Every structure is written in C-alpha cells, then in structure tokens.
Image (cartoon, rainbow, N blue to C red; front, side, top):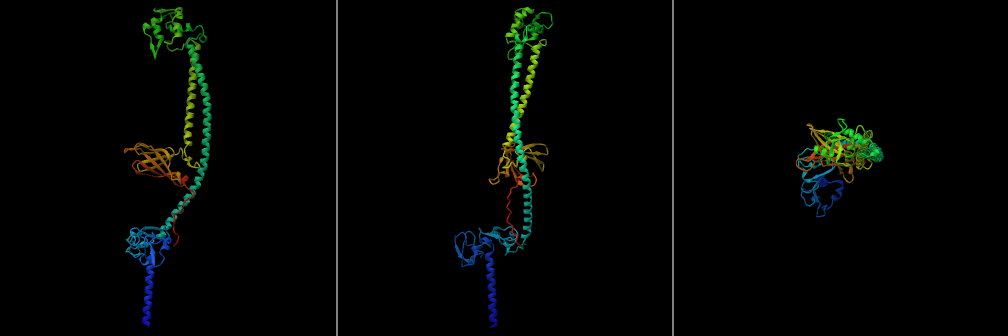
Length: 452
C-alpha cells in the first residue's frame, strides 16, 4: 500500500511539473497586451482569424497559423515575432527566426532559452545608461528652453528695432527725394545760365562780350585774327570736336587771311553766336567774369547733385536689403532672427565649413579654395516642426552635373554651433546645427522599465 501511494505521488508531481513546463513554454515570447489571446482553453484561434487549432499546438515548434501567432516563443514560423520583455530596459520584438539561434538578441536572454549560448541579463545596466542619457537630454532641454525664451525676447526687441530702422531710412529717403528735386532744379538753372552766356546772350553777357571773344582768339595780341589763330582756337562740332582745316578757317574769315575787330563783329561773331557747328576751344573766357562765375556755379551744382544722388541710391539700397531681411520667416516668435548676420564654422579634416544662416553655406579647403554649397532657400521641416530643417540651394556647379545644395538640420542644445557635416551623396551636404531655439517644449521620454 505504501509503495502504491509513493508511486501515485511521484506520478502526480511529475505531471504537475510537465504541465507547468508546458504553460511556461506556451507563454514565452508574448507581450502582456497579447496574453488575452493565449488563455488556456481547448482551442486556439489564430490572431488573424484564419484558423482554429488545438491549444496544445501553440509553441509546439510547428507553424500552423499563417501569421505565425501560434509560435510566439519558437522559430518555427517565418513571419513570427518574439517579444523581449527586457525588464529594466526597453521591450521590443525580434524576428522569431532569431530564437535559439545561439546569438543573444534580448538583453534579458529570453530568446536563447533552449540553446548553447550563455547570455547574461544586461537589461538593468542598459536601462541605467538609457535613463542617464534621457535625464541629461531633459536637463539640456530645460536649459535650452530657458535660453530660447531669452532669445525670443531678444528677437522681438530686434524685430522692433529693425522696423524702426526701416521707418527712419524711409524718412531719410523722402527728405533726400526733396533735396534731389531741388538740386536738379538748381543744376538746370545753372546750366541754362551758362548756355546763355556761351551762346552770346547779350542780356546776360553784356555789351563787351564780342571784344572779349576777339581778344581770346587773338593769341599774339596784334589786334587782328589770322587763319592760324582760328585753327588754334576754334573747332568744328559734329559727333565730336574736329580741328579746323586751313580751307575751313579761310571760309570763316570770308575768304581772307586776316580779320580785324569790326569785321569780326559783323561776320564771325554772328556765326559763333547763332550756329552750333563752330565753337571756341575751352569755352570759358578767363577774362569774362560772368562766364567764369556761371561755369563755376554749374560745376558746383552738378557736384552737389551727384552727392545727393549717391546718398539717395545708398539709402534705397539699405531699404531694399532691410526689407529682404524682414521678409524672411524667422519663426512664430522671431526666435531665429538673432541668427541673421551671424556665421558659424566647423573644421572637418582638410575643409572648413561656414554657415551664415539665411545667407549661404561655403566650404574652404586648406589650399584656400572656397566653394559655395548653396544659398538660402527655405524652411523644409515637418508639418509639426517646420523650423527643424533649412535648405540652401543653387550652390556652385558639381563636376557630375547639377549644383551643390545643403540641408541644415536644427537640434536642441544649450549653445549655437555646428556639430557635424556629412556628404551622403555627391555634392549633397547635411549639416547638424545645434541651437537653443530648436528646443521644443515637449520631449517624450522613450519607454524604459524601471522594474528590477
């Protein structure tokens, strides 16, 4: 009787162990959210609803369901997935083909439960490092957001200053426009006065202008004009000033070779006053104070007008440049405005990369050759974060065709600096640009188990 009881007890314990072992086998590789599909019952419905099988066939190392849901803990199904619980670290799925393949894929070693591999549970150490990293990121985020708020306040003030500067420049331009019109009027009047004097307007030049002109032409001061003196002092006016030939000088003297003052006043003087084909070289008569004063006044007014025109052009260029800068999208709170007119450098091997936000990106070699990698184009971030990427395009041509371009990715940081440069494809560059204004108020922490 005692022997029979002992055998029955042994059989009961063995059966219990086998049942417990089977239950453990069937539940391996399943996340807590899927455990409701694997409750002990007579049958098992494949999760995709394609088939019903006996529950004993779950995790029996034979694939019955097309979606592989009957073998979550074995490598039997090609489409199956094994769930790594990884307590203390991040849980994740691996392809079921990696189960018991001799390589530790889960940090809790649960994927190698029936292999020769000796896997250590490293989840806690990994979790500690991950938590330390996330905590550091959160501290950086908090500090970055504080700095961002300061830069937003500075951006608002700077925007107002730029707007005030634009208004001031526009007022200066209006004042210069009035001055410009006044100087143009004064220059025109001075030129008209000089022209009248040069044309021999007796009301302006006075009665002795013919005598003054005669003395100007009479180089040897002998009281008469010669053919040689006319050739020396007069020119023909066509498309350009031409010297008089001897025949042309004789013709102006009425066929003779000498001319006194009375003859000059009744012939050549009228030609000089009424016709534009002949004029005196160096038209200003040094002995005529009226003509000399008018010429000086005309030059002075022309010089003054030129200065005002230059100032007006300069102011308009400044207005145009400022309007272009103000037309750029600097963020919803003008937080990126402080980057304008700033440049940031990074040395990578033999090259120096230079980013001037909202302007251009360049690459300079140690030999001194500088190449444009693109000029400011647009923001190209995601709809949720449109200010996360900048695009600089239409740089210098690439030897394979097309032009160089650069994508600048903005990341959260406590300093504004270039952090890295890559060239994933020929003449296409990616720059990592860190700045506090890229920090976003919400940063979701990755799921990490804190359980032991």
